[in-house]
Amino acid sequence: MTEDSREIIGLLRDARLGWIADEIVDDIALGRQVEQQFREEGANKRSVGSRIEPYSADEERRLIVETLYQYLIVLPRAWDEASKLFSAEDTFTTIEPDDELVAWGLRSERPTMSLGIAGDEGRRFVPISTEQFFGTTVRLQKVLRHLWPDGIDAFDLKLASDQVKRP
Image (cartoon, helix red, strand yellow):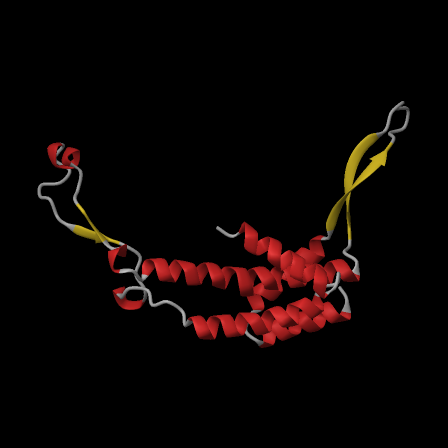
């Protein structure tokens, strides 16, 4: 692992993001799988196998930036969309037990229940402050752009292609 990678891992741990740091450390330790041709003794043709190699410094940085991008930009965007959806008044719906349950004697009465996704203490989700969320995201993207080993333009292309893929 490069010194830069160790420094980033330390910063993540200091920021109480040790679970992300652990994932990055594990991924780097596993290395990358590469195909390799080989010929077994006495065989006429080559076979294809694989072996594990350590990451190069650029590959380590790319892995770190990609992991941070997914956790700190993509995931919060998804959470923002989900919280908007689940904060709507019609998120909760009334559900009646199936007639078959009553007929089979599994339910003697027909209790009404409400089904939905709730936040703390049963309250509806409250959407994240868009201003706070996007302000942080923009600043983080600027940092990640400069860390991307292929350059700022390549990161911007990646960001654009990821946004197109989003539902």
